Amino acid sequence: MRTGTTRLPLHGGKCPAWLFEKMKRLAGLIVEVVVLEFGAKEVLRRVADPYWFQALGCTLGFDWHSSGLTTTTCAALKDGIKNREKELGLFIAGGKGKTALQTPREIEAAGSKFALERHLEGLKETSRLVAKVDNTALQDGFDLYHHCIFFTEEGDWSVVQQGMDENSRWARRYHWLGEGLEDFVSEPHHAVCCDYRQDSILNLVARESEENRRASVLLSRENPEKFLKEWSKIKEHEASLDLPRHHPLPQGKRLSASLYKAFLEQPADFRSLLTVSGVGPQTVRALSLLAELTFGAPPSHRDPVRYSFAHGGKDGHPYPVNRETYDQSIQVLQEAVSRARIGRLEKMQALKRLAAFRKPV
Image (tube, rainbow, N blue to C red; front, side):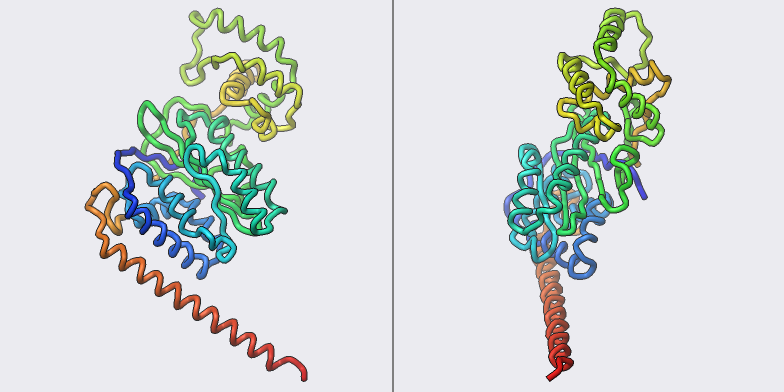
């Protein structure tokens, strides 16, 4: 199993409306073929694979580092199965920017519409926790701006989310898969694919950060008054301290408030600490540094990262999208799906005839 993220350089260009309409149709058909052949859970496994996801984006009309591949591919998948979620047994919530913030509401809406109530709270908690891990426990300089969760009627799920480093203009994609996931805060990512690594990050979901996570939780349960006093002394003498560049002192006025909030809630473990309202990157970084100084438990600074053209690229690279070829691909897939549906209908009719034949008179 690969663990980590996908990170790719971006170049500009906007997806034209005519191409996105084709993307939706083709993406919907591809999903339907996978569901018909392998079931809805296989779609979750595939979108959690960065190679397959990247190839899908290229097939839909992107070149390998097109801007918007992640966001537009997820949007095409979401729109491509719209109004057929129940039929396919697959649901998609979230998206880019403000749409990502609506993920819990979209999960609830799907639950109400399709009677998925027993999995709703678990899915909403998963969505929040996955975002919190990649934004707080893994501090790699990439700010999340896209979050999309794929789930089934049985509560199985996968997540694709992406962050942006505004300084370098690199994007990093995070792939998660619920199947086989043992721990949300220890090597939780499903896949990674990239040739660029960061030198100075705080990786509290690395396996080697286990002692630092435990020490951070212990410190969070203590009254923070003493820590804050020591913290102020450190900051007063910051100019003369030889602190490592990979672990700078957190700044901000909310640090004390979030420490008190964690103290009041007395989190049982690191996962619980992350779910405390108000506990963000600065609080976690502060606790991690205190854990290192107090208990001698250093955190990991290891970057978790590891790393086809079909119809052309949306911005003309490596060549413009050929509309005739694109339409032909849609037609071929549509015919294949239609034949698969007919085959399934014939099997159901045969089973009904067999049942009628065996029914006692």
